[in-house]
Image 1: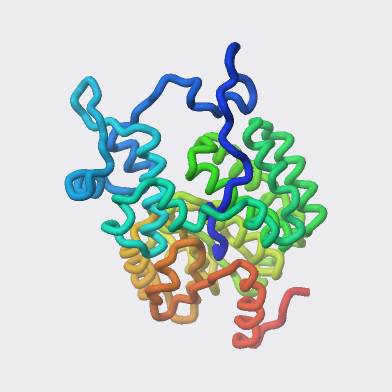
Image 2: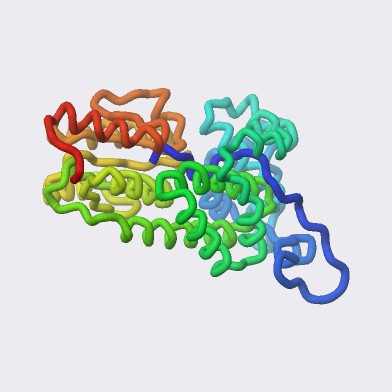
Length: 345
């Protein structure tokens, strides 16, 4: 919720070089130089980057980028390099940069604007001590070793506890995976493998916690808006709420607003917790928050967290932004104090 799912930081593994001779195996399969060059339709680029078709066409005319070729049907065809640059541009726009400033820039300058040009060792030195194993997790992802990654993450959970696992392992690892994907050093299927393994471990962690009773307060309903398909941050928030003894009900991702309101009534929820990444249009985020705040009873709190900058730049009355997951236990305690309710146990 308050932890970016995949914000850009510094990658820890350099791109692989082609290995001459033989079929690619293991991490060699990540080397795009061994594959026949592929292109993407404008619809595929829209789905991948979150940039609309109209935006792509306007930029092409106004800024001279992107510069798609044409396929056999005379439709626009975008190269992987262009898609990767568009991904980075989208992240910079979500962070508040203007299109006229960033679209014409070369890729290396865009990386500098995104803060991804720092030395990897310096970045790791600033991370908590528990993140020392992060490069080994990245290696397991690139080796496509899902079982090995799950075992390594489970051990990290045992060492650090649920809260430490989320803040010191999953959060920084999300950042590294996101940056590797952004720079073309990790494929989407590898990012999906990582996400799935983390979700498996987090669900096991939640299941191992003492079960809250239906009357345990606060009762928390968790979901995302339509158009927000990312659920890892939601699961991280559920784990933190569960640690505080809250009664959690997760609807998963992309629940229609009115159905969220109906669910909050059915479950007698005290808090509706919403998770956002930067993939949604900022205006859609704000409009949705205004609408759901108006539709919910005044007693039901709305907490919104994640990596979408608009949450903290355009505040919505009656909505509590949650900048960091680490702040969540304090907010729960404050809710109980103002509601004159005891904590768990």
